[in-house]
Length: 297
Ligand code: NAP
Image (cartoon, rainbow, N blue to C red; front, side, top):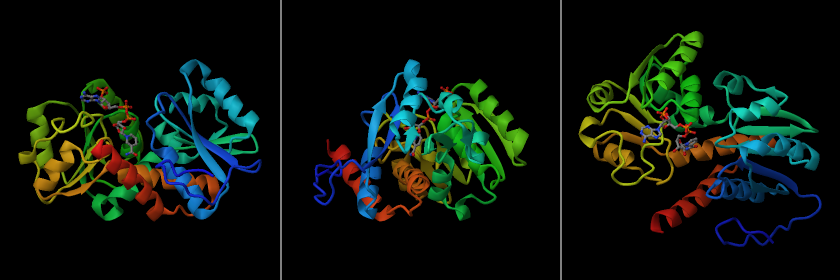
């Protein structure tokens, strides 16, 4: 018998010699929510598989990948700090992963590994094409997630303004976008006065930085700066409702939370591994349950 990770026994399945293994490689991985989402999905569609976490230190990444092949692990997600370095050990990539320059999902087909990046597509599905087309996007952050989002949004939008603490990282992302896409791209150093002006003129605001993870007082954008005609998307999912989202709701803006993106990118990984449509409703329910526990703890 296995549980869905929330302590609720599913009762129907047991692990056998035929059970397929999937997982997450990263460091740290002990707070990951992916096992709950993926095991719920496997169970719901009756796919005989289990998803586990592998804490892998940098110096063991290559041998961990060799181990995946040797042990027949069918696929895995990759998280911090291995999303870029893992590319050295993978045989082929989809276009998205090549453009973004990092991988978060790997499929093992009889020992040949293919790398994908589902973060950008997960973000795009969360916002929806109607929210994106032709808009001016204010993107906070220039790290791995911001890069994935910028490359996926760039073909659809009018302008992307990258605001980041370290200006060199914002400039590097701007150069990469300028090489590939027609939209206007600006890079700006994070500072309150400039940010206020930029917020005012943006239709879509995306927080893809780590700002907001410190709770109630950690909002990168103040409430008074936002207005009702904007979409505010915060990809941070711990806490599930960030201070930025609270401010945006009070200002009457449309809000999208990080759980939505987590769910969508996880559903794409599930589809790549199983060839089946992900049971989104059940995955969302499991995610909401664990996040409610998080909020009450
Ligand atoms: P990352 O590669 O480490 O990038 C972090 C970004 O945040 C960088 O731009 C960094 O700026 C900025 N930053 C960090 N601390 C800051 C601070 N105190 N003040 C201002 N800027 C700061 O991380 P990542 O993988 O992109 O992840 C970023 C966030 O997105 C995390 O909270 C992660 O959990 C979340 N995420 C969510 C999903 C989802 O599915 N919802 C998926 C991926 C990531 P510098 O360049 O100056 O260092």
